[in-house]
Length: 79
Image (cartoon, rainbow, N blue to C red; front, side):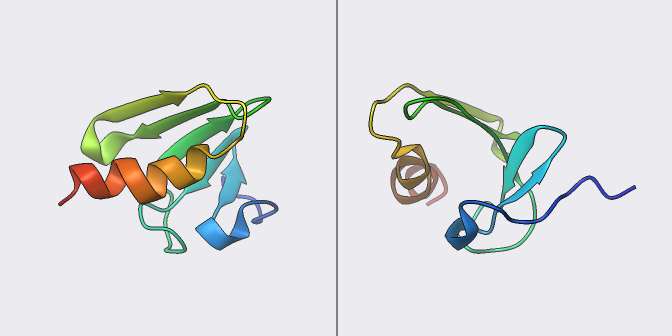
């Protein structure tokens, strides 16, 4: 059984959806499901990146958690 559904939202990030979690590649627009994500109301995000032993919780009002992850956090820790 295929666990990944179609990319409905966040398509510029290469997202898919499966088992009630958003699945993202580790590189924006890439392929694969290396970032397991929950999206909440008002900009709340939970990111789990098993390959990096990383968990990030974002509580915000503007919903820019994906930008923060891809443009700030991941580049800072994978240099």
